[in-house]
Image (cartoon, rainbow, N blue to C red; front, side):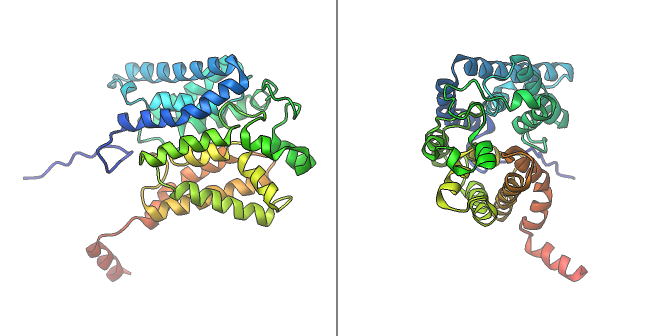
Length: 317
């Protein structure tokens, strides 16, 4: 008599927490960056956040209805995707473009591949990169910030074009700079990261490997390899938000400890390459997405083998 094994899709969390219990933790951890973004950019930022979350929820509900699939909204993953996507958008982005990005993130990146656990890249980053390609001008317009010291350009762009002297590193640390809604305040992001770590939602393997690799790369290849320059590069753009909240996504990151470290190193190297030698001063989103694609290969070489299988494989060599 054959035995049947019930195999569920990832994310696989070896704890009593289910996906529907983990997602509220992520939402809570994102609140400091969200609230700071609303204070920094005003009510239009709040509207954009609500629009992206509502669009993600509606897209997933409609898709489930069309394909006659069980309603997947209770797991709250669509809320997390909508919130992360909103935090990666400039506050001045037209609302209808945010809707398009939300639909792309949920329908194309997530649901078309089978839903939660089957997508090969982070849906929020997929939506953001799609909008960067489709609406490049609007996605790089940051003039709606209350802090206009940089005349609409992000600090990273100013550093790249005019050098470190053109920016205030302390302002970058505290968040008094233009940028996307959720990336400006490193302090708010780190508070959220501490919440995730203390609740056991993430470990430090991926963020630490990511940030250390990036820091070493920038000290070697950066434009002004000194302490102030390194702090500015770490605080600028979406690096901190990406390292703690998107690179650590259960579905699109490795499950093995060694694989997580290798994955973090890949993210750091790619981000450094894009920032130093690419056409854009940012690069975090594309670095994480490319690293997501490498995850199956990373896991293939880092997943532990059973002793008997390892011995058999050695015999066959």
